Amino acid sequence: MYEIVLVRHGESEYNKQNLFTGWSDPDLTEKGIQEAKEAGRTLKQAGYTFDLAFASVLKRSIKTLNYILEELDLLWIPVQKSWKLNERHYGALQGLSKSETAVKFGEEQLQIWRRSLSVRPPLLEPDDPRYARNDIRYKDVRPGDIPRGESLEDTVHRVGEFWNQRIVPLVMKKERVLISAHGNTLRALIKYMEDIDETALLSLNIPTGVPLVYELDEEVNPIRRFYLGEQEKIQVKAAEVANQGKVSE
Image 1 (tube, rainbow, N blue to C red):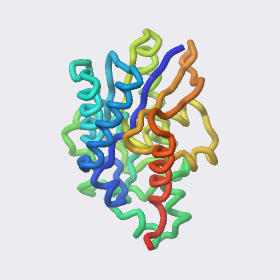
Image 2: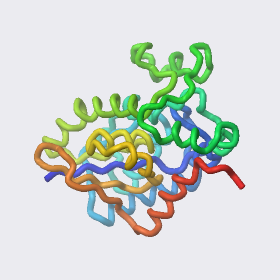
Image 3: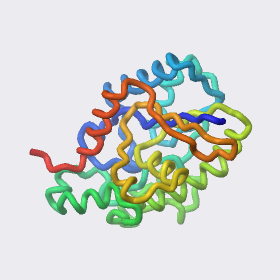
Image 4: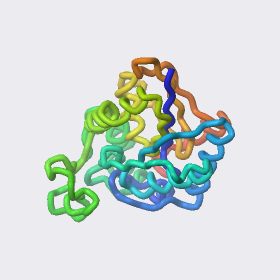
């Protein structure tokens, strides 16, 4: 049996403000920093250690990973960063308030944009300054591969490809792997590994800063997944994620 640990980054400034984030690059809040450190302490108390780690190229993922590794005294292990672990690209919704978007378009439409599998958000225009084509961190990415908006299905494709090409060979060599990524990146990975249906996917809310452990069989198929930590607190955090699409009172 193999194991791999996934962690959604700690709370970011956009999470705190209830904004669509996507490929935007806000920093962690003080709460997010503490969540990341707590994730590291939880992993340490449970006896986990790692041989290498992965992050996206967005600072909230990278900093979360660094805080976790510091708590584990593992800052020395190899870390690989990839844009393929970036959050789902929310297109023209990036930077907009979720609650205000719910007022404008309705909560049902908002939930479709946030949680459905195949529906893309409104796409960025090619000349939109939020379009990542001119961002130096993507200079080696083919322009046609840089999205102007993604459905979750699009994210499943790029994350699944990364999983098969980069992660699975390491797991099969019994390397102990930690991935610090994003809510929709991890939802996409869960969809890819477990092939859960769209109804189950809609209700899958991944809390920030909580280690998610996957047990895998000899062919790297999932056996079970579970969160580490106090389960009541984790349920509260997951409910907070679910409520982000609600109209503010």
